[in-house]
Image (tube, rainbow, N blue to C red; front, side, top):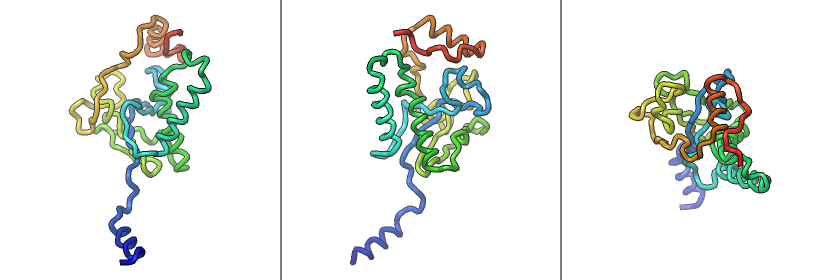
Length: 199
């Protein structure tokens, strides 16, 4: 069998659709037209979780995310203690990287189109930029209760895949940070207050 014949046979068995190279999930799914996402402490109306994802080796998102985080750390070595770890390497940073990748890979792509908040059955996964599967909020953030659940369904919902029970417990208690959180969520003010304790 010639190499050309072998290639022709193998091409016939390859799937015609692009394989998924990255799987990510929403942790915030608020109305992109509103300015209220920040009241719940999110940096984006449609924000990804960074505690759970899967990617093919050397996927452009993982490469860019590592470059972004290491570059930010190197550029801020003297003021590193003043930087919010969530903004540096958490969900906002991860969301920024994935959003940038998807928008660069497909000019017609709109980040806000990933919202599943209006879907009464708990949202469905959507493919962005050809190979990025974005799962609905129920996939990685199920069981959020009734207040500000953003469409998240119960832990036993068919779309529920993983559950994170930490609820930010890794942070130490700080009166100023807690006051800022109350001011944002209850009064809709204090948007610029720091979410991390003073160093």
